[in-house]
Length: 153
Image (cartoon, rainbow, N blue to C red; front, top):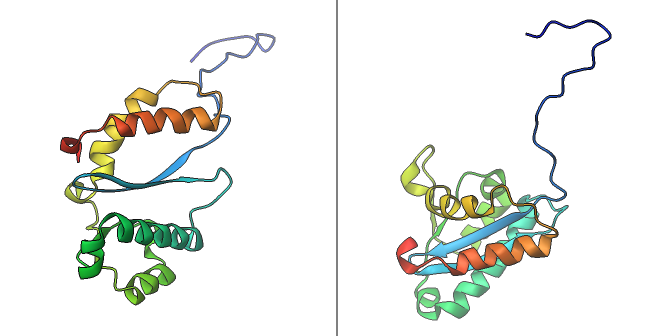
C-alpha cells in the first residue's frame, strides 16, 4: 500500500493492452498431419449453425483425401465438449450421416491432443508479437503448421 496525499497523481498500473483483432482457428488432424484448418471470421460466433457448416466441409475433405476410409466409414471424428459440438443439431447431423464420433472424456489430457501438443508448439512463436493485420497472423500460423512433422502428430 502506498501513502499519498489527495493531490498526488494516481499510480499507473501495468496491464495488458487490448488486441486490435481476435483470431480463431478450427483445426482437424489425424496421425499423419493436418486434415483441415478453418479460420473463423472475426465477428463470427462458433455456434451450432456455424460448426455444422464446418463439419460439411470436413466431410467433403475426408471424402476426397481418403476415399477408402470414406467408403468403409472407418474414419472417426474426435471433438471436445464445446457447446457447439454438443448441440443437438450437430449430434443429429453426425448420426444422420453415420459419422463415427469418439466422445471426449472430461478432464482427460490423453484425449485432447491440440491442447497438449499443438498449442504448446505454436503459442510460444506467436506470443508477444504485435501483428499488423489478420492476414499476417494467418500467414505466420500457416508457416508454423507447415513446419510440424508427422512425428508431431
